[in-house]
Image 1 (cartoon, one colour):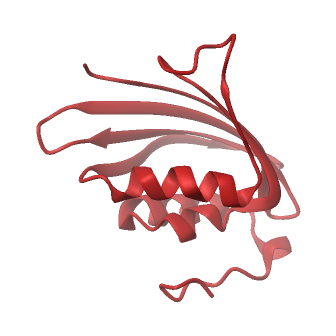
Image 2 (cartoon, rainbow, N blue to C red; image 1 turned 90 degrees about the vertical axis):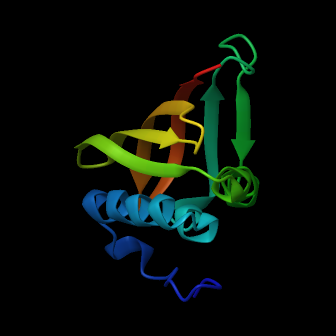
Length: 130
């Protein structure tokens, strides 16, 4: 269980749809532990954005590294909403839209590969208003 009482076990029973719903709930609740629980212990996430261009992307290795970044994002006063999503047998793709109280918006696109009910690799691109 996470600190907020969310189960972490039974990964093999998680379908791609269940992983997507876990992410949706976690982002909506701004619960970094819940979001991180969708990832394998040794997951690798590659992030491309203005600060991390394609020639020098940010690469997060392991659930702990990912959770640290998600914790920072979830600590910000902003809303998160997973919009369009596509689910495959062993992958999910989805869009996250965020909004700060001042109206600044962030949009991110994620492409995730799943194994045994968890995300094992992910590639994301995000951009924001300036």
